[in-house]
Image (tube, rainbow, N blue to C red; front, side, top):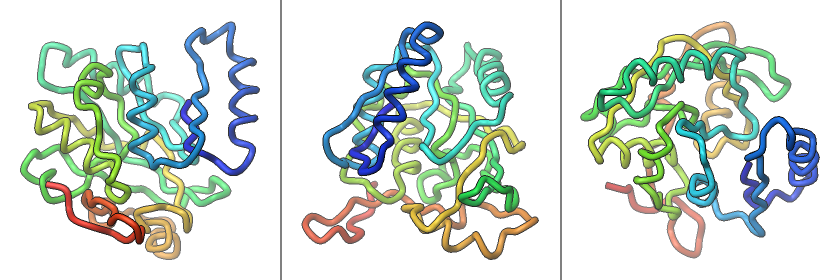
Length: 217
């Protein structure tokens, strides 16, 4: 687990989990960064420590469904001899209390579409070596981090596969950096939404003033 400079008690909670799971998971470690460096800074730091063949980047407020790993890892194993490097799924959209508001849909993988559209969620089962070979991700990208990560991997010649079923829970709240929480919480209830119409493409943060800067190509 990587803590990106949290101001609450996240590190203390994580340290307790580390102690609790030490016997079951020898490689459960907490990396507490001294200050917030952004999501891609945390990914760059954490991926260098991953030992497993397959890894999933999971935001602290999102949750995997119980069969997420069994289904996605099996799909990757079936495609071991191909250029498929990651498997992603649709998701349940939930509020801060965990109540399901609707379904968030990704789109089927298309390399040309990925150049101009962010449609792959951050949460995906990926071959660790493939992700590590794409490091370092550009830490100046603070908006559209999903887009930057998957596009960089795709540009290296790898592809992804979408499973059109909701297998994780994506939390909508006012702190979503993409702004998706504010946009969807009052409109998606009981329905579906194509998340590609809401997730922004990768842009670098402007130096000094924290505003959105140049698009990353």
